[in-house]
Length: 132
Image (tube, rainbow, N blue to C red):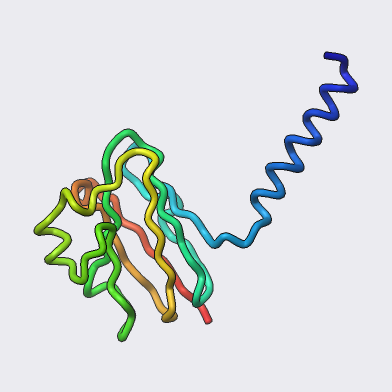
């Protein structure tokens, strides 16, 4: 392949990548090796959907701290649990394997704190700031 064709291929690849990034699909939090959420703190707008994607080989959960939600905000946890205690009691149901994802739409403004049940003691926690 000549230099000109390589440049064209690179420009096309960059355009495809930028097009994928510019779609308004909401925000993403990655669960990565090293037992962490990336980014650890994310700011989004009210009614925005956040997708949590497990990019590590370990299974993880996305579990809200009940005392870490804005007043009146809906509880969220992978596995569809309605409370933190229910999520903790049925760990297997909430686990996301490598490549799995979980989406949450945030309808109330405020700060949301969440964690991964199996890796909470390792500091796998995150925060979402939802703004008007």
